[in-house]
Length: 276
Image (cartoon, rainbow, N blue to C red; front, side, top):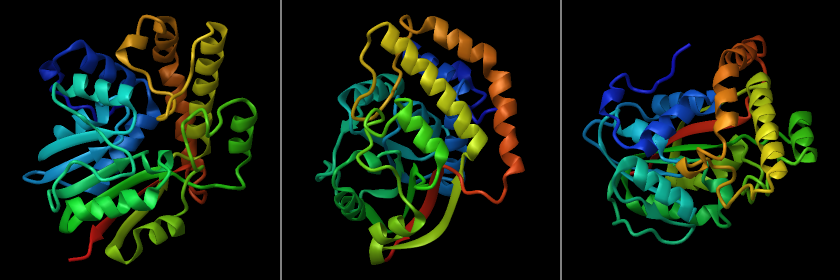
């Protein structure tokens, strides 16, 4: 059982980064997400890159270990502050309006679980078109729209709703993303991942966390959904120790996804290239 966290973790400085990496090792979904994004992006060495929506900053840090020069941004003020502490540099707060970046500034833009959180996703894509160099690469990771999923219906009935996760829309199909990109981008590759058993594990963890927070009468969720930061560490120490203890079981259950090769996953990742 391995992750894609770099081996040179001796270079990790700051308790926020150590905390973010510890959470990463306990999250099968985050590990799979990073693997998929990294594969879509390819080698970023020598490129100017922007990542948008990396949650608590761990994926921003991991992407930097692959090479290239990176800038990070997100939607929620708390998430932006956490990303900045993890990276030890400024992170930018953006929404669906114009960003502070220059036209043609980036060779690659990676959008991670962000489009479903903003009111005007088309405006985000148009802004990416502006700041991306002609021929530049765009990688997008979003929830995959599965309207017939009984697992999604069960999650919503038990309280893990789109509203709790800060989603303004439940997800995207490949066709809807293709329409969003329009004629400005050429779709090069798209894949779904995280099938039923992986999602069932994630659902169980989400329900456990939700129940514990409600029992302690704590607020859950934000504009970016359920995001754990270092300040949550002491409050949730027991829960995190439990996650570490049951990680081998979660890993084994998630492997059952290989028994369902014909089914589409609950997450969608794609790579597109801006037309010259």
